Image (cartoon, rainbow, N blue to C red; front, side, top):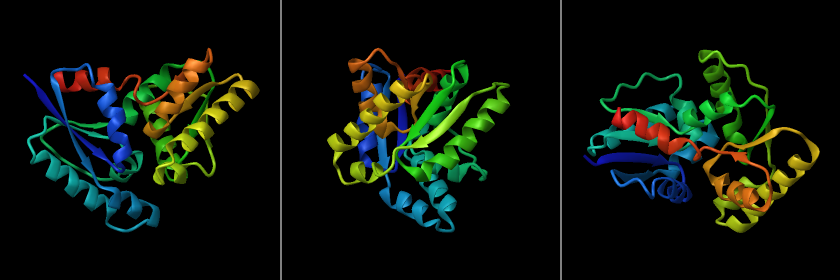
Length: 216
C-alpha cells in the first residue's frame, strides 16, 4: 500500500532534495508543505512560534498523511521542549544524520551556512549521542556570509563558497567533513565527484530511516 509522507519545509529549495532522495521509492507519495513565514519568525525569536509549528503539523495530519518529515532544523529545535501528540510518526531529518555521525570514529567538522541552526542542531546531536551511549569528537563551523546567497536564489555562488570551504578543511585538517543542512547537499555531492573525500550529509541515510519507520 502506498504511503503518504508529508514534508514540512521552511524554504521551497528543500523540496528538490527530498524528491531526489525518494525518486526510486515507488510506494511513497511525497506531499510538500512550505511555510517560509515561520523561519522569518525564528530569526526574530518571536514568542508563540512553537504553537505555530504545532498547528502546522496538526493541519498536515488532517490531510491524511501516514507520516510527517520535518526538514528544517529550526522547526525541530522549537519543538524540542513541546509536547505534541499526533496519531502518525514525526520524522526529524537530523535523526538519521545524527545516527551516521555517531557511528563515525574519526574526529569530525560539522559545517553550517545558517548560524541560526547551529546551537539547536549541536545540542540535539549531543543529546542523541548521550542517549545512545556514543562518544563523539565534533566541532561546528559556520561558513560566513553564505546563507543569504541561497535565500536570494544565488545557488551557484552558494555552492561555490561551500565547495571552497570543503577544500580548505580537507587540506588543513585530518577530520571527517559533514554538511549539516539540506541546502548544502549539492555542493557536497559535487565535491565528492571532484575529490577522493566523502562528505556526510542528511540525505545519505534518510530514505532507509524513513522506510524503517513507516513500514514497520
